[in-house]
Image 1: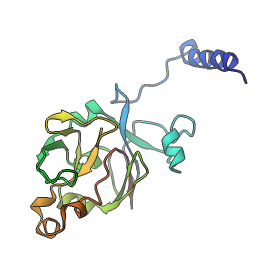
Image 2: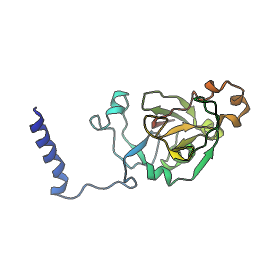
Image 3: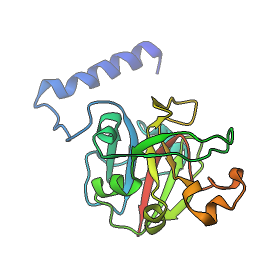
Image 4: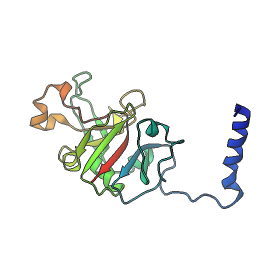
Length: 191
């Protein structure tokens, strides 16, 4: 199919919803999705995995039949927590802010006991929901008062204040954050 034919087909397909009833609007997001929660959840606001539109997920071999999607505004509407961990990148204390991971999971209606947190580069550490609560993991949206950009540590980072837990603070700083994916975009809730 040549480019002109493809664009014409795309334009015709895009006009189809306008021809009849408008497609039902899912509650919530007005901006682009930053975080998708799938798996053992009982709330949804987006449809199943789409192999064409969910390209990064397809490349990372994900599939799901239901999901809860958060845009920046949805995450910002959740109560925020501020933490001040010493970070491995410069061994300095930084301020990170965002909702607790447990709050995000509750908003999605999570019912499982474990989560797999996936970053844009495919890194996917797993932790128990109990540990996420114990260590007060946050989904950081801000670093030192500024939104975190894609290409840095953001736009989202699942992280905790390792300095506050003696068993973690005793580790060298470069070993404290193995369970903390930056560039977080997907959380799979497992039973």
